[in-house]
Image (cartoon, rainbow, N blue to C red; front, side, top):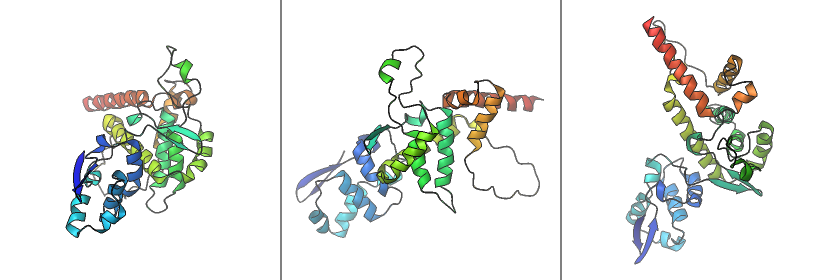
Length: 271
C-alpha cells in the first residue's frame, strides 16, 4: 500500500492491482478508460474514502498532482480483474468465469466475441451488446453444484449451463447494472481473448498474402468466425453434435485445433 500524509493525517491507497479489493475495482472501473486529473482524483477518492471534499479543495496544484500520481499506475498497468469473483443485481447473484475462461465452454466464448464486436463497432456501436456479453459470461451458480461436485464426471463448471434464451432475458435486466461491473467483465473477457490468441496462435495465424496489388483493408469483423469454427468441428464429428461441441471445454477444442493447424503447416512446408 502507498501512504501519503495530509494535514498530519496518514492515508493509504493501493499500489497495484494485487492490493485492490473487489469493491474498490468496481468503484474505479468507470474512470479507467481515459486518463485525466479529474479521473485520477475520482479514483483516489474512491480508494481513500477518508479523504474529504474540503481536504481536496484546500490542496495546492502541486499537492493535487502529487496525490494523483499515486494512482497513476492504474492507467499504466494492464487491468487485473481477478479480485472480482461475482456481483449481485436485482436479487440475482452472478459468477464471473475463471481467469482466461479456464472453466469456459466454446459457445460462451463464441457468443461473447459476437457481442464484443457489436459493442466495439467503430461506426455503429451497439451499447446493449455489452449487457449481452455480461449475461453470456456471468451466470448464477448451478443449482446442483453441491451434489455434482462429488461425482467423477464433474467438469469443474460452477456456473449454470449456458442458455442463449436466458442470456437474452438477463441482458435486459442488466441494462441498469453498475457501469463498473460491466467494465470489469469486459476487461475479464479481453484478457481471456488475448490469452486465447497467444496460446493458440497456430490456429489464429493469418494466412500469407501472395505478392501483387495490396488487398483492400478488411472490414470490421462481426465476430462470427468462432461460431463458424464450431460448426466446422461439428461437421467432422470429433466432439459429437453441434450441441455437444458448443458445450465442450473451450481450451480442449482450441488446443487440438491449434495442434492440427501446426501439423498441417509443417506437412505443407515439407511437401
